[in-house]
Length: 537
Image 1 (spheres, helix red, strand yellow):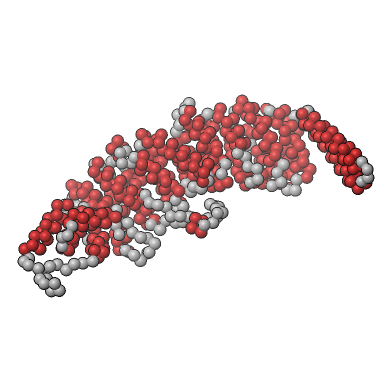
Image 2 (cartoon, helix red, strand yellow; image 1 turned 45 degrees about the vertical axis):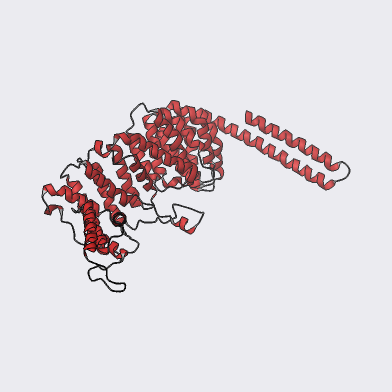
């Protein structure tokens, strides 16, 4: 049952009060004609109501109880009346635009907009088949009319357009499969998306909105009062739709709105920020993060230099923390593009970005670590020498941990950094600091890593450092052997300590265990002191 007809029908009943059934029918006929853009006025319903009342008065005395009055109209079920009013707009198809004169096209356009405000249940494919097809064809005609640019829209048309768009687009999104089942586990990569049943109509409505926004006949100064902040917020809420077709349309439309309505640009950026904040710090569930980041990538590309403080705060507070959620792989490509756009525009931000990346570096998720290493390479390609030197120590400490990873993809992706000529140049310029940080990891990989590909790549990197600076390489190797020797001595002392403890526990006797235990603790404390001194050196 359609909302517009409901309201009109209820209003007609309220005004007419105790009038007869004929006045009800007249009021609903006027409502149906108004819904299709007909010429019926609100006064016509009153006239019909008054006429019915007068006819009742002129009909003479009422018959006795139980005797039918032949002059009185037959009363009908209100639900039947509403159903007929509901179907009446589709009883006779509206003419095509090409069949009317230029002066009548604007009025016909409004009538077709009114017709398209009727909604249908697409969960039942056999219900209202004819009406659904009429609406679909009407929507296609509206798209063609807007695309043809036959006339400039006046303000009254903007109101009708906005109403049609809001009725069709802004709706509660259906719950996802895991919400329906009550399951706590949620993996967006494994879940099948819920496709929108009404897409045959929604797709054309989105196409209409897109053509309407980009049309030269749409005056942004007038349309901004209808495509306002409330409209944009409702549009942004639809980005959480599981249907990728809908999100793709929304992405294109929001980007066009951002380009055409300059007055809304700060609000759109702020609204997207708020979506990201809720996603990062509250829910970690949103279907449209990738599409929103894709829009932002284009927006960031157009930022003027020097960058505003607002834009730098957006980088620090929203983009960098987006590395935190577990499902980062769903949008990492778009996120990486946005980050690199910032560094490309202002290379001095490289230090800030790299430290932020290290802050959110994954500890137990190897696939996420591989993604981070790919992003690290892209950022390093845009990093200049001064910024590189500011962050190289903590950065290559993390690189050393990645080299030592037992997961071959992490170690392999880390070694691929040395395939990049620019990164090799940066490393060569600062080899005295970098090689001591990663030498131990390279040596252990070359000796004992289980994966042959990692073993071979490690040998190539070692050879590269040897050719860069053999004296430095020899010093690092000598230091590594000394550290290994000290570590072996410490391990031997620790083993001996535990052996004495075991012997003391077995021996027992008066004072025996206590003496043995105290001796072992003294030796272990001395070993720890030696380890601490070696680390300081």
